[in-house]
Length: 331
Image 1 (cartoon, one colour):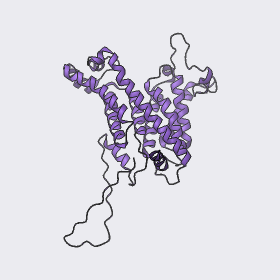
Image 2 (tube, helix red, strand yellow):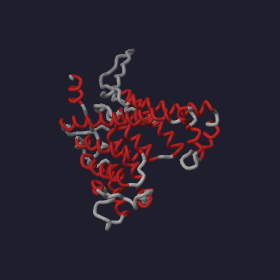
Image 3 (cartoon, helix red, strand yellow):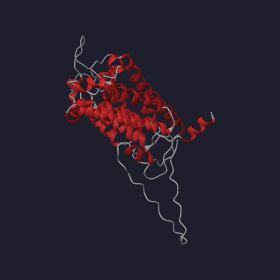
């Protein structure tokens, strides 16, 4: 109980991780709307008429509100504009509501939402609770105003909820594969790489086509994917260092899926969700946050550390001045 009170007293929801994660999720959804026409997203399904379904609570979605007089093409670009505002990071306390509206509209209205739209609908609603505690003008800046204590406590609960949701998604994805023969016997990646619709293409296909013909290699790829999913599920619920490892594995997993199979929007939504879930509980003290440096380091981008200003006191000859230790930030 004492530890919980300490965490609540020091928790800071206004971290760069919140901004980067929500912007990446919004960017992924933006690609769906920009590169897919409303007619393709609202295809009629067997036994139903053309979408969207506007019965009951679904009538509040951006695809339905205002009736049939409003063209779907206009609705599409209104949602694009909303997502651009979200990506910009402007007034996160208020734009989280716009993001939630777009996410719910996509999840409820399009004919065949994939796992990305479904998880985004849940995560973005939880991001509303975190965003209520964010009183910055831009989510890219360091906070200058005192944080609202009650709303920060609610934000911590929402952040824990996001971590639990991520753990459930990856645990279920890993465990459920053992009941599918191709995954259990280690041959699934052989067929995925060669799938004419969703398989690899271009240079990745050239490389992986021959490699996946080697039984031990395709087994390692197949079972390695399951292992990564289970590790992410466990590590995301641990302390800060564990969560950062989970983020690195998540980028590795979905980066490979994007490179070989596409699924850009799904992969970016999952990476954005993992970024938010990995957030530390306090701000790093350095002007360039350690969190952002570590995040970019996972994908090979190195930000040099800012050199500390030399002390004005003269040094005595022959005596070395020790370098100060770098702070690791919060938990």
